[in-house]
Amino acid sequence: MSDRLQELEALATQVRGCQKCPLGRLRVRAVPGEGPPDAEILFIGEGPGYHEDQQGRPFVGSSGQLLESLLTSIGLTRQQVFIANVIKCRPPNNRDPLPDEIDACRTYLDRQIEIIDPLLIVTLGRFSMARFFPPTARITRIHGQPLPLEGRIVLPLYHPAAVLRNPEWHQDLQKDFATIPALVASIRQQRSASQASDEPDDLEQLTLF
Image 1 (cartoon, rainbow, N blue to C red):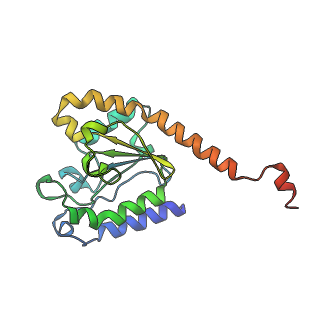
Image 2 (cartoon, helix red, strand yellow; image 1 turned 180 degrees about the horizontal axis):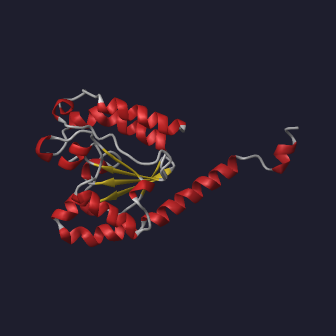
Image 3 (cartoon, rainbow, N blue to C red; image 1 turned 135 degrees about the vertical axis):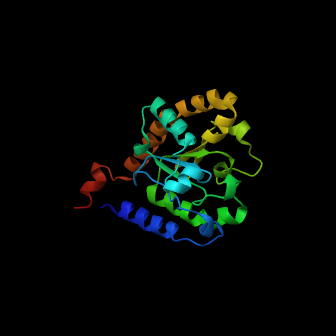
């Protein structure tokens, strides 16, 4: 088992036992997130819904079906990406997460980003967008506009659940999703170039011996 996988599993165990906010006493199951520990793409939703709360897995309801369809459209499966949420427990009646609930889960999400170290973070919806963008940002204005941040790219998209409620946004979501492969390739190339520039050239290597 890789070190990354061990760290993610240890973190998931912490999430499942978490009682930092009242949601911990209301949930059926916590939803830490799932995916490969070395995923190049990290999707961050807002919070678990009914089906996620029942199963302890992210995006397994109708929003998950739409997300999987969108992944298929760019040649990916959900097994190739990591899927997480801003908060790890379902709010009552699927209401919006409260600031103290978001704060309680912040360290978990920060640690997931640190462990996975993705090339691309895709935020789904306004609450995950707010994790990286200023308070004045509006998803209807900035969706699909990539933000370079700390050696990776953050891409804000509509949440699949919002698109299901507002079908007129579906085409925008498809177009934004279609940019993902090129963004990943771009940041992958940048990281490779950066790593290569850090390696000593042949002359420098010779001086080591």
